[in-house]
Amino acid sequence: MMRRPVALLALCASLVLSTTALAAELPQRWVSAGGALSEWITALGGEARLVGVDTTSQHPASLKSLPSVGYQRQLSAEGILSLRPDVLVGTEEMGPPPVLAQIRKAGVQVELFSSKAELAAVDENLKHLGQLLGAEQQASALAAGYHQQIEAVQAKVKQAQAGQKAPGVLLLVGHAGAKPLIAGQGTAGDWLLGQAGGHNLAEHQGYKNFSNEALAALDPDVIVFSDRALADEQALQALLKENPALAASRAVREKRLVSLDPTLLVGGLGPRLPSTLQSLAATFYPAAQASFAQ
Image 1: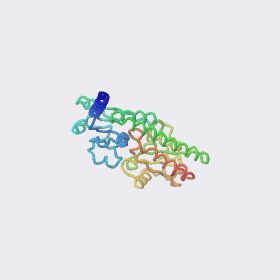
Image 2: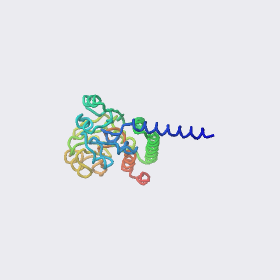
Image 3: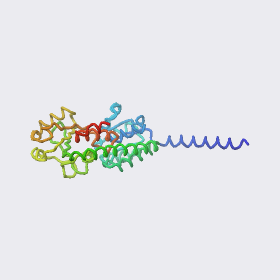
Image 4: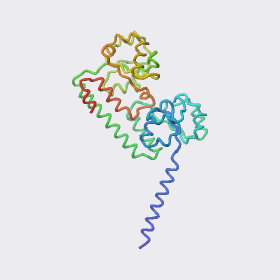
């Protein structure tokens, strides 16, 4: 009669040991070269494993206290290897390739993720991160919740559009206001504007410089500006100073100008985007602001 409990105890013990062994095999020291990935790692409970991050990893604020490995496209093998990581994670934007090859040669696991502005990419990235962190169920729940948040914003946008035409919008990305790049089709910026119910007036692919005159001719209803050096009012004043022709645009005349955190535009779609979409949509559809605040 005693054999069954003994066998059960042995089975439980073997399961505990196998789970412990599996956890030990997972990478424990992480370097993340991508702001959105760093945010997802944190959301999945993996922040304690991060030993270094790139300059786009600004959220949560606690990540700023970690050693920096530089900009995601210009990584240094020496700086990363000095942190003794088990794994380096980043998107296909990460590089340069010779540095990644050197890091792999040193025995560090290099895991690449998608930076595409697509919900399918978010799903795949979360699944991959969940496997690496041993948090697959949590990753699945996060992905499902993310879809629900995006769908909720889309439903409100659809309601708002019943009473107002989609505004013509431009997203300008600059550095201290100078020579801003306009987010065109296929960019994270374009995805953001569209999901928030805006009509992107830029029809080109990717990010492109425009002359002052060309910018003014597009005459957007709303301007969303993102500056890598300045924020909020300082960024706006620099933008208008460096691009005086914008003063004649409807967006400036009616003061429909929105500041956007530039880290939201690199490294794929991150966990802060649903709340950003709510905020943008409320600006695009002022008559429906109350519904977006709910």
